[in-house]
Amino acid sequence: MDSGKRTFLGALVTASQQYEDFFNQLKRISMKSNNISRRKFLNMSGTGMVAGIGIVSGAGMLLSQVGCSSKVKITAGEVMDRIKKNVGVPWREVTVDTIKGAGTPDIVLTGITTSFMATLDVLEKSVKAGNNFILAHEPTFWTNLDKGEGLEDDALYAYKQEYIRKNGLFVHRFHDHWHARKPDGIDEGWKKVMGWDTCKFDEEHNVYELPQEITLADYAKEVKGRLRSDSIRVVGDPQLKVLTVSKGSNKVPKGGAPYADVTIHYEPDRENNNVEWERDIVASGQPKGFIIVSHNRKEEDGMDNCATWLKTFISEVPVQFIPSGNPFWRTV
Amino acid sequence: MSKQITAQQVVDRIKDQLGTSWKESKTDVFCAGNPGTVVTGIATSFTPSIEVLQKAADSGKNLIITQQPAYYLETEEYMANDPAFEFKKTLIEKNKLVVWRFDENWGAREVDGQLLGLTKALGWDEYHIQNSNSGTEPYNPKNKYFNLPETSLREMVTYFKERLNIPGLRVEGDPEIKVKKAALSHGMFKLTELQEFLSDPEVDLIVISEAIEWESCEYFRDFLTWKGRNKAMILIGREASEDPGYGEAATWMKTFISEVPVAWIPANEPFWVP
View 1 (cartoon, rainbow over the protein chains, first blue to last red):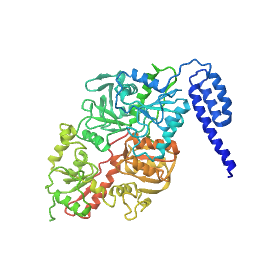
View 2 (tube, rainbow over the protein chains, first blue to last red):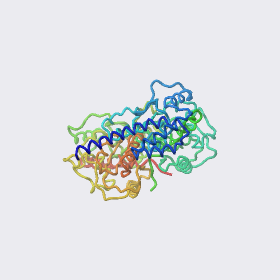
View 3 (spheres, rainbow over the protein chains, first blue to last red):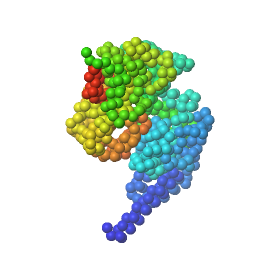
View 4 (tube, rainbow over the protein chains, first blue to last red):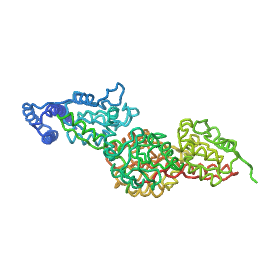
């Protein structure tokens, strides 16, 4: 390639990067305005990106429309302030509920996603939906504290970080405080999906009474349906009569287990400890059953619940629950 | 009339076999019973579940050698008054059973007995890539890769369920993809091992026991979103992953213990599925 061509291409790349940066700025400004529909805006932005040079005229048009907007904008920081105010418990000094990745509180919001986890798929779906704020219950970079340990040279880690940066996303975890809220926001979603919200509740022992007795085999089928999961696992006699149920810990021994016929819990900590104890409880003659679901199935509905909650005090931008979905399947 | 052998003497003989490679370890210890007990038979297993202990006692074996400890991963003080703990303790005392945990030193041999056991359980011996990472011993812990006949993931999952009798397995990945190079892990799966498997672009089937879900399971899901959905992960469960290795342990012990019968009593998958 001769140097002339190289210079020309280099200039083109630089120019297109500048357009992209300019356009992202513009997107933030213009999304204040509801005069332009989100769909229309996205179509325009798509055209602008592809056409490169054509972006200039598109941008001019957008700016003129933004000029007559009177709608209120809201930033990521402002939404976080409102969450802190509305969650009803003091915000902790030490918490996993922090910004994940490059986002900053001054980002002007176009839409909000709530999710169990900010998986790459959820981030892509959020971008497609025009949501640049992602409120996620669990870690983004696959470890509890999201400090990137062991990921320094990891290409996927770098890619995900860059994806957040280049799309101007604001990703924030919402774990400790959503659990600490009264009632626990995750638990609230879980009870609804399990149909426990209308059951008789023994608060002291954390035990719910089902409307009628059912076998463990039938109850496991019901749970499978309610949680939309074909990968649940069960320990206990399938013919066990079940009247009382409890949301149990994944540790040994379990809170609730001594009082309920069936304990449902997520992700054993670990199978060689937790599940082996369950198996022995059953072998020792205790009339107990255990239903084990994935971490995602246990908590995802609580983030659907979170979207409902956010809508009660955020009206400037759309709020949408985007499921990351159960990671596992089983039935062939 | 054969010579008598005590539980302690069995353990000493195992130490002799391992020679200088034996290391004192907190996971290679007596966890229940009296080491001076005269052994009537040896059972090996992944874990001394109540069911395994009962089967051992019923078949006249009083020394149970396992990877996992007698009372889960907790102390006896912590477990006091727990019905499972109390039942098991009584069962052990009543039948004068001895439980010896054989974990770290079994796993530290040059031949990875856990890898070998699981390979045989899967019927994958002929597909094993020997010397893939370490040239001396075919079943060195690093040589955990397999060239399989190309199969759809859907067919592979059916094969796993039937072959290992594990209806409770779990899968990530598109059932329609074809898989042909597998990486096989046993024990608790770590993100570092997943990174190692994924560094070989040809690996399209990753077989693991269990993992912290938001670590390896979600990393893998993000990887598929990033690079395309042409790989899969099968989680077979901790028991299925570790138990066949204790079949190997029984086979190995028979080569130097002839006084009493030695047999593997599989713990079997703890789950059923609705």
